[in-house]
Image (cartoon, rainbow, N blue to C red):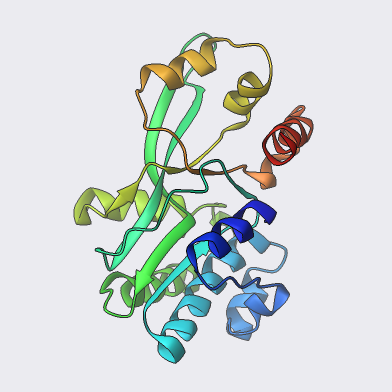
Length: 222
């Protein structure tokens, strides 16, 4: 959060931090249905929050997850689009021996202007999907990256590869010994990351929290 705040201040962007009040606008019915599933509640809450701020202030509102780090403080937001999302290059094994790079939009970084046709539809669709879904079969990213990926194949959103995400295997090799995961990422020939989501929700993965701390120490204190 520190690096994002500094980046925002550098470019004159207003910076806000939202806590648990993010969930206040979600209907009691949906909150009850999603009890214990905080990431999905946050997917809904951020859409409500963005809509509320735009109705008050207009302009452009960008959501950035708290577990995001800025690498390039000089990078600026695009001002010529009414809707945009970060694009992740997700590195993982597709079997026991092969690594693959999966490119898709993600909602850890997304921006909407007051003229965006996507935000109201995305908000409506997300709430509708959850309201109709069987509580036993609500996937963790059902209304997050999975939904955006499905919609992107039809709508062709503006994606920003500079705002990406680091999968645990990629981060492990980024801060440690280089290997096949990093090689797979480099072969994808991606532009330099300006910021990246560190996927803090995956800290149960072996050594991921330790690798996040190693990265933060290097970026923030060197």
